Length: 301
Image (cartoon, rainbow, N blue to C red; front, side):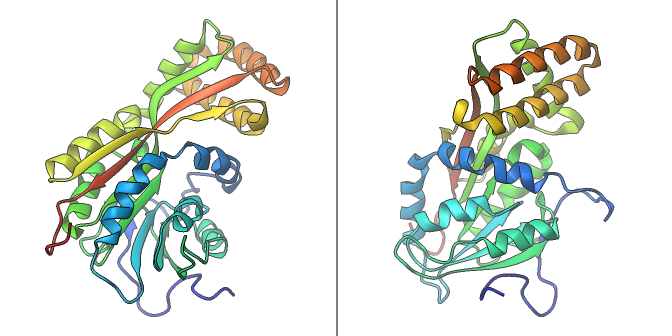
């Protein structure tokens, strides 16, 4: 057991939850995929958003346990491993996910020290991440998430923005798909696959590539200052394993959206995987990071 890790004892705490779903619904993301992408995520996240975030956190009223950070849909905890050591001061991270295995992994692998050596503690809350209960963010200093906005609906993003505004806490929401992919060398089918993938991302009312624009409007409508920075994956021979898995998922989603692409897409994928294995493929997958700074409350700026 690691001190500070794992569920908090006592009565059930407020949490976050997505659409009603059966308890037997499989996890959305495999831990192997989350681990595979962690290095690319860390390299991609927009460092330019950290200074305005640090300034805001430094001006928060002092708390005995330091800043309280809610990480929504934490997965294996990559956001905490990236961000906690880049912020000064004591931090208490509240990790939210619906997968108990991922929560355990995230808690055990969480960092223990901030940038200045201050203590970092963690607790876990099982639940999903789109519809906030009214008091889930009470006392929050910051809300974070990775690769979350694009799998939400407009209503869910509005709810998230309203909850952050009500709590007066900033939100750092990273690695939302931007709908643009560049592959080198190019192939005539690239654009058709990309368009089908983007349509798949928007199925059932999900925002997909429109998520950052919708989120920026939702936070701005509630008085927040919104900053957006690009956070692209740049994948080359050193990231071949990630590129191959991404290709399979990218093409697979495109074919699910447009089954008539299946025969051509199969040939396309085989050629792309061969180029990847040979070290001849470079891919840029565009994402965006968003920082929303709410109106100061309680006289703090």
